[in-house]
Image 1 (cartoon, helix red, strand yellow):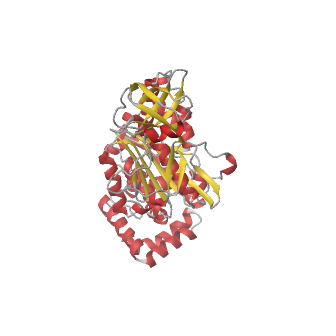
Image 2: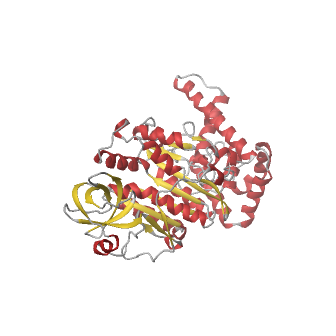
Image 3: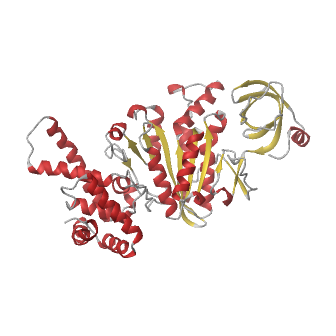
Amino acid sequence: MKGGVDYFLSSTGEIGFVEKVISSLVYAQGLPGARLDEVVIFDTGEAGRVISLHESYVELLSFSKSAVRVGSRVARTDTFLEFPLGDELLGATIDPLGRSIDPARPLPPMKETRPLDTTPSGIETRLRIARPARTGVTLVDRMIPIGKGQRELVLGDQKTGKSHFLLSAISTQIEEGGIGVYALIGKGKIDTKKVEEAFRERGITDRAVIVASHADDPASLIYLTPYAAMTVAEYFRDMGYDVLIVLDDLSTHAKMHRELSLLGKRFPGRNSYPGDMFFTHARLLERAGNFATAKGERAITCIPVIEAPQGDITGYIQTNLMSMTDGHLFFDHVLFSEGRRPAIDPFLSVTRVGRQTQSPLEHEIARELVSFLKNAERLHGFVSFGAELGEHIKRTLEKEVEIFHVLDQTEYNSIPASMQIFLFGVVWNDLFQGKSRQDIRQSIRNLIMQYGEKPDVKRQIDTIVESSESIKALSVLVRNFAPKYLGVK
């Protein structure tokens, strides 16, 4: 912000003095003309914001990493907190105030600014979600599909593969012409570096923006992070892009909101969270959706992340977010320890609007896959009791294993949609029967390589998928084509 305390003192004619400091909360006397959400500036040059007004003092939220000194001066700026926006943000890693994280690479002046916290668009601007948001993850795209404009919660324990899925989803959407916004909320600096490196490796840096706050940042900055990221997403939506935004993670954001609320002596509610906890997250997530804009139909697809310690999805924040989103993907630590990748439980995961974006063939595939895997899950009960298994039950359990081998994405980042459907046709027709996991993985690897490098192979697979109106029609075409490229009979 241009100008220091003296500059703003001369322009507003009001001065305040800090009386008390509690972490990021600052209580100052003076500033009779202060308004809610107005930006103030301290002696150190650091900024803050007015969060409440009282008869004898003003409550401020400081954005400074160092503690504000009692007795120091504070001045009004007669401005409100706004975020600088422009195409120059692409490829940058910024903090919640729009400043570059790397001092060696400062951002140029931006052409536009917008408030961080805005009222979500009304229903008159919203459109039905009808376009798929591909993630490149076969299990999700086939069984728990996501639509553009959907808000799909990702929840699970730490170290269960959530980050790998998020990176796959954001890179797939960027490859399809969209923009990616990744918000790291109160994470370690090493986590930010990992995301930056992953974007560089996938070649998507110039189409992505990282908004990051770190664990050693003040609670005020961490609290602002998802709002800043959503403001960036809205800007690129209005510029004519579909945007995928990842909020990683909202459990930290909720803790920061609780910390600031308790320090400010607000009345605590369940689990000591403030009474407006649900409203806070609902208002944030409601800014995503599928919109009618001046540039046509454009969507902000939002993937908020939340921790579920030890697989517990019944906590206060978890159930709050599950109720305000359009579905959730549950990453199970038990499945992860068993070697499943991704470790998503398809039976505890939900998509409420994603299926309406699927073609009739995709809808039929999802229905058959879910039905078959549920039946196979029930059959495991007979095995555990030592029951004698018939040939039909044995084959069902073997086919279940083959399906999970095809759904496994340990070795590669994403798979095109037509390739996913083709591979379903292969495994559904028992063309992988009797093959080991290594052989199946090698066959898939070879086919993906040919799909990307040989235009005739890609063209044939795409034609097979596009001309199939049912699983039966797909099966006939796959049986004729697969032996040549997969080495199966």
